[in-house]
Length: 438
Ligand SMILES: Nc1nc2c(ncn2[C@@H]2O[C@H](COP(=O)(O)OP(=O)(O)OP(=O)(O)O)[C@@H](O)[C@H]2O)c(=O)[nH]1
Ligand SMILES: [K+]
Ligand SMILES: [Mg+2]
Image (cartoon, rainbow, N blue to C red; front, side, top):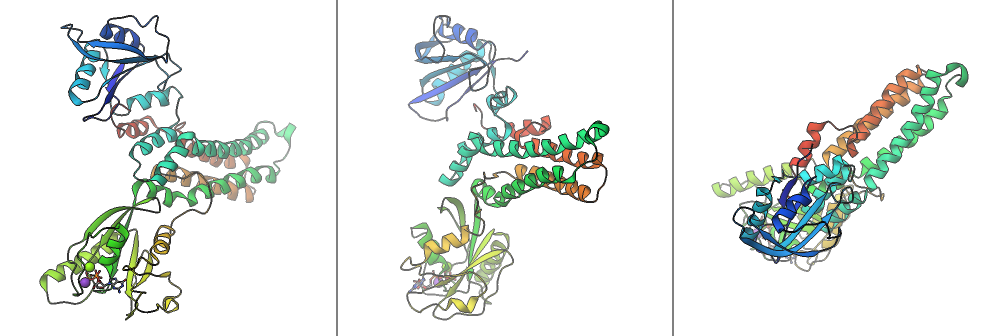
């Protein structure tokens, strides 16, 4: 028997309105006790005034509005009651306490969403999208989360699963009824497996970008002293964050700015200009700069257009920004085949193109749903590997049983995305990282 849980559903702190939410079989009887009236003649989904009383002392705690939902027609699929009262930590805490005293249990983080998942209201990818939506730091991330919440990723997973089911049906028919069905026609299995592989490939192509939307991207600025790294940081931020002077070796410490560039949350690191120096402070700065560059996702190598010098290119993806193009015409051909963009930190020239080049190192070309979590990518890569094995086994003319084993494996990996085949402890781990009241 499930119990009835309660939590504050709104953000804590000063606010006009705050909501306490209850879910479970006793939600309505507990609420009735706390607001001292029956909910029998209050229709579901309709707000009615209510006063919350302390069940022990009888003291009135807050006035507000009460609404209830009858399962399965609710967010969790259970009976749900929400009390909308005044915002503010103290009042909300007292109202919550009243519901707990009347028999509800304090909800664990993510427990409402977990119940919605177990009652088939949301699949796992959708529940994760809900968490991503709440914590989205950019419009693009918010949009991706909303699409996933709509179920676009889940639907694509179902379409891939349907292809695999089709292949399995053919395989199992030849295994179970060899006399009726006859020999396996490889093409009837290869075609659906091939389509499944193609769809998976399309999804996986956007994985790096999707993860960056939720996790953000670290971009380091590097280059010789005085090329204009700090000026570029300021231009991207639209504010004077870093100290800029005409003295080489101005920047010593790493300066980090959290920006949203072309919809993607980006952490931009300004670093000390790289050079040999006897100044002990600058030496530390240069060492820090190298370390920051080594761990960045993308590096912008800044070059001065008036005196282009030989470049040390980083290992990871990078873009060369030829700065001060207001002073000298930048010869981009010099840098071919590497990606180079002419910019001026002073005039703002070329900054949009630079941002596109930096973010564009990972933007997927297709409109396939985005994979926003490493968990999704991992499950789909395993599914793709199993499909690959199944196709090789098929091409080698090996027995249908072997092909079926790989196809089943692919289906199981795919099912982890929506939670059909996900292990319970993993599911609990996912929900435990949600906030309380969600
Ligand atoms: N004309 C022109 N001057 C620029 C531009 N960008 C930077 N400068 C100038 O170049 C000089 C050095 O700029 P900084 O931004 O301090 O260069 P930096 O690479 O951060 O230098 P360090 O921190 O010393 O390594 C300053 O005098 C800037 O005003 C540009 O696009 N055009
Ligand atoms: K400088
Ligand atoms: Mg600087």
